[in-house]
Length: 476
Ligand code: UDX
Image (cartoon, rainbow, N blue to C red; front, side):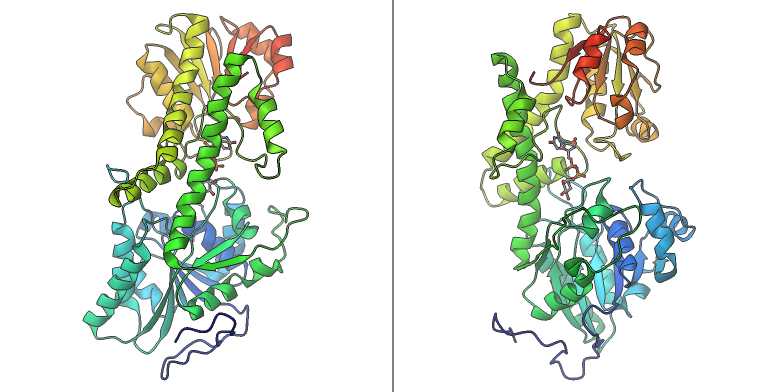
């Protein structure tokens, strides 16, 4: 029975006969996470750090073996240390069916890759739900949480798949559902999990909400001892737990990402006009950001956004809208501006070098942003591809993502190394800290032509000028 909004939901289930783990507030829960990918691993590591008993399940046996051996399969600040610290309270398994029976809470964190039409693929989510149904025990009570970024309405399908599976087995278990989107940035995933702006829970079941409130209690109250590598930001205020319906929770994730991507595209659109009228877009962004209603974040002009989330979520959102015969002109325009930013780099180079064919161009930075080795939809890699298509000779460099870049584009005729000797132009695509501190006099000495395209407006303009380099920015 739903509880009136003001009443405290009971800690104990009113279901007679249901065996429910009776826990004092904030006590450890047994959590099974399905999918040891980006979201699952970071979430699992933090939940284990907070004292919960975590089982991470992945069907990739190699990945599970790696994790058992203490190796992190992904590059993420602090993750190796966090996994080492939580090894004792974490179980890694390939056996999903066997891993859910004893759990209190089951988190679905499998991938939702894009289909050809942009829609997010939910086959893995539904397959996980079907397997979960095979492992649930009769007479027990569970909370199933969808954390994967899924098309609107998927939580409902998960519910239906599990209910059907239980019916087929003739098993009676009480399953409660919640949608709990994540807002992790790559490279800062552990930080964002420990110190979130908000925790969003979408559920029609007050006890599922309570279960998640208790799971996240140490984060909501910020009572945990910060890990040495991930100190609590100064002045950090504990996050609110926002409770809403599942569909709105699913929508929040997409709308937030679309808004952020649009904010970047907006400043990039202004950058084009700044360049024409003789304004400096970084100054414009500074002045805009001082308006508390706008805020300074995500106003860095440059070659635009990429990565595993923004491009995919922007497409998925449009696919959802199309399903409802609705259009999203702002989202569409934000995508178009983002593509134009990449082409803009080539236009600027062409302006100075005239012909690109046969030119030697160095591209620095292939991951989609610093502090990650992820090259998915990377603006830098896209620029490399466009340069090669125009007949330029490209030398590409990245401090950590060279192998990933090469594997993503084995067909590209590119030299994957760092020499700047004899290049006609240098493009900064990803502002890794080491690129910002190059010896610019030495760079100028080695280049054939002193052309530097600063695709992130991140290089020290005065130092480059002093070294005799032509410093071309975005919107300046
Ligand atoms: C994003 C969201 O921030 C996160 O909340 C969500 O859960 C996943 O997607 P992420 O993809 O890791 O996270 O990267 P983010 O740091 O947001 O940057 C996205 C892209 O925008 C990068 O390519 C970055 O270089 C670019 N960017 C960011 C800009 O071009 N300008 C900015 O001002 C900020």
